[in-house]
Image (cartoon, rainbow, N blue to C red):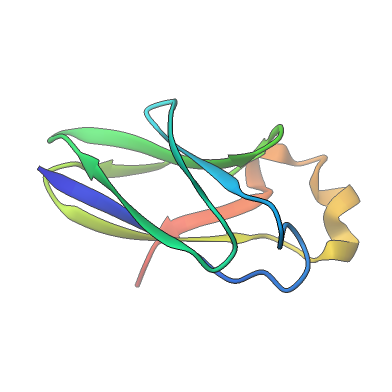
Length: 99
């Protein structure tokens, strides 16, 4: 049994006071506030991880539940580009494996 740890980078403006919902295999497992890091247990096998806010979301990231994985989550763009970015709801949030 492994886990996924998600670090949400501290926001300067956009979504600073709002939480992102973390989903694993399309099930809500928790929320992440700006600057917060949380870990979630995983069963062995592949899992789809995603962060969402309202109708906007990150692309899904597939992780193997047999291993411990670290992901980094942050908002794409700035407070000024928000109205443009909501037209691309699948890339509003960046979620990727940490280096």
